[in-house]
Length: 121
Image (cartoon, rainbow, N blue to C red):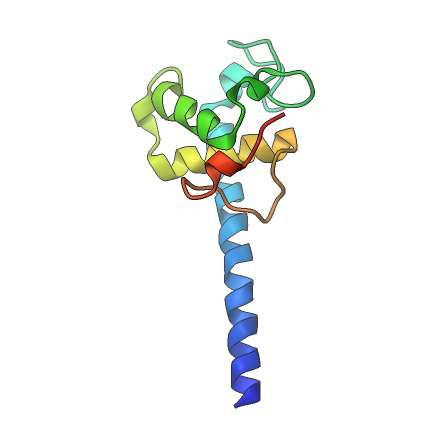
């Protein structure tokens, strides 16, 4: 019985990390497809927006927390059609931005449940 319990706990502990990595990977792919043209692959030198969007002293800090950034993305991004990507994709892109900014780490997930508690500095 102990072995079964230990095995179950090990399996359960592995799934959240895999799901979190999947969300980040999805965010990276969506950013590459929908955001790179305007913001650049590095978030600094896009054709449409020359101001860096992540990193020290950048625009991302004005949102104060992850929920504020998500809500901005939800309504206004991508610029040429906010309805091009669904809500789950917008959470994934927001996570990708926050990981690049250093406000979150790879292996974490982002949703409406925790977004308001994640500060952006």
